[in-house]
Length: 306
Image 1 (cartoon, rainbow, N blue to C red):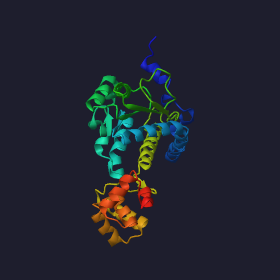
Image 2 (spheres, rainbow, N blue to C red):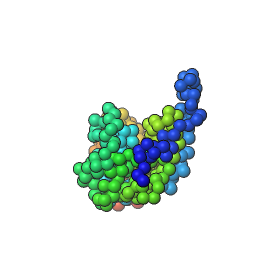
Image 3 (cartoon, one colour):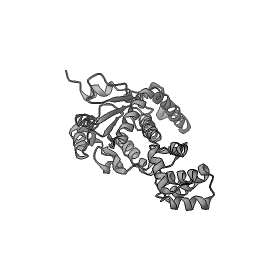
Image 4 (cartoon, rainbow, N blue to C red):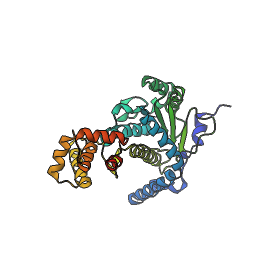
């Protein structure tokens, strides 16, 4: 017998009511804030329990980027917005081409600023978004769904798998039963439990999704040589703040004064990574590029090789 949507929802921890919050509407403001804060503190522990799955997912992302592929995110509502957010933050922070990190959200970009909840109900639209993006064997898709049953997201996941892409499924409920999810290479079930406001998965579930996405892409960037120590050295200095941050990184890591860092950054074409190797090795920009290439993009290896 086919399970109805009503029955499916009744089985999800993110749809359950936590009895501790039944008097939430009668509590003073400070207590409501304390309740939310106390609940949020449980999220990092739930994420930590999924470290093995998060590591496996990160390895897929690294293999994708190193192999010249693209990373896609697919989701609806808050989940979709978080995917688009993560994709949009990678280019300025780590110098990733914006075409290699792409968010697919149910309803299109308009739903980033105005909710259209009904657009999540079509699995065909999820599959269509994947097809239009020409997801292929070199690529990886992270499907994000707090409930684990969102049709748009499952449609995108199945379609990406069918096109031989690597696939990751990030959920905020226990792992789906065997056979319930088609095509996920790695499932990350971050079980955060019922929300303070029952069913409002923009809260703990959304926080967990943000944490996991941060972990996957940041760790992947670190393992691909996008940092030196814990400084971002492949950032794109596209704003006044990032330009000054670039100079500060050179001052602190290469022992330069402000004027010297400014001039060196100009000679390096704005690349902090290139400038850093130039400073530490006393070489030209061309020599720095060669050292970095031989070191696989890692500054510490390039400097050590010199």
